[in-house]
Length: 199
Image (cartoon, rainbow, N blue to C red; front, side, top):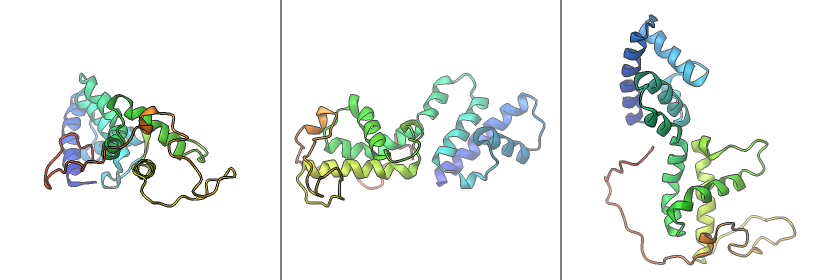
């Protein structure tokens, strides 16, 4: 967990504990905190070992007690894995000129394609952080093609040589075939905090 997540954990635990006490829960604080973790994750686990998905689930349950009337907040927490993925992919999607309304569908299609060999595919709504680099690699590959940047391809199978596929030939999105903007990207000054940063 990051320092920001650690602080958020204790703040939300305090609010959830107060709500649980009002509901009549009498377990000691530490036991109650571990009970809440089991409710969220189905197992007891140290909060320091939470990954982002665990933390999202824990926050959803904690806020389910502390902010029962705030359905919008609870729904926003369910969208966190997608928000993290889209935030990470945003710069590459800008380079590829994928318009905002179609971005999530474009990334969903990429994620489905990159995990084609898995026994059970994972939906983007539950993407583990470890899979975000798969999407970024696929977007980078597409950007290299559109910019005609030299790069290597693994053998693609189906009778094709390693450099034998056409750019955009497999694309299901017309936005992916648009020419790239060759202008320099706008740089964000270091130390700038992005309030929409879901990490």
